[in-house]
Length: 355
Image 1 (cartoon, rainbow, N blue to C red):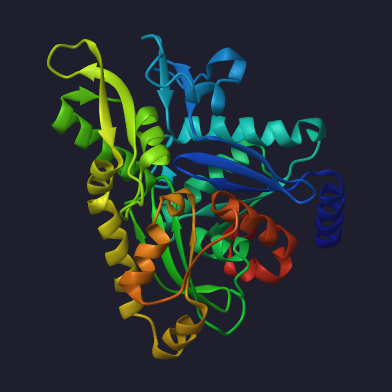
Image 2: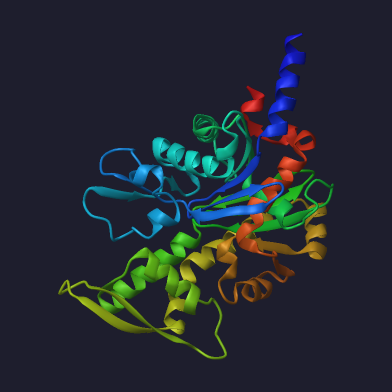
């Protein structure tokens, strides 16, 4: 009898809730809903009163609102990125951020809570998974499912990850790069590197500090990466004027930088990703390696958009390289596919349904 009542409640809740998928990334959080696709894409940033977990502006200083405050906030406000390298670094502020995103999508249906699918980096341990589940439940989720990011990225890229055939995904996010060979809805071989888009930005900041004695912030570094960043020689090299604070005098100053020097600055993190791919390929079973000679490698995540990365990997690995359609939303769209096939995939997911 109790089981029948629970099933009835779940059916009623499903009728009225807006279930959602979350790509809860170090740099950005994307929210997917079944009838609307990706409905939110905002920075994973929260502005709080200094020394507290209280979000300013009535709880609205999350995402874009907080992102614009980075490097510009007064001493009584802290601008925090509550996730580091793909996992929760600040439990309370992550919960506040999740509550903001869930309420923004589900606000008109507060009498019933949504099911939430969250993509997490490959290799997270039980404590880290529990932190994601607890944060989402406290933020307003009815049931939480966790799917590893490589599987979500593969689903979002249109790969047949549930079939008995090998496919490979390289998801270069903000805090981590997940490199995985997938088959039968599982990860066969994988590594999760703590080298990704944030490291690209840090390498650019370091280069400009060392060469020009100029301190620039993460927003400027990201703009440089997107505007003139590349990993291969360009037919036409570019220059860009950047602004920051002189390391020696403390005064505002400008400098002209070139795409060639930014390419050199990006070499170390890019080579680390290449080595990670080679490591996974060398450990892949022969039958799946044979599949990869036909299917190649699919790139996802914002880091895949750095100029020339696909061509460089093609030359280095002698495999076909394809950048997924709309790679920035690949993981989020994959969480949406998990929502659509939740009953079929439940055995491959972590979450509160297993408690």
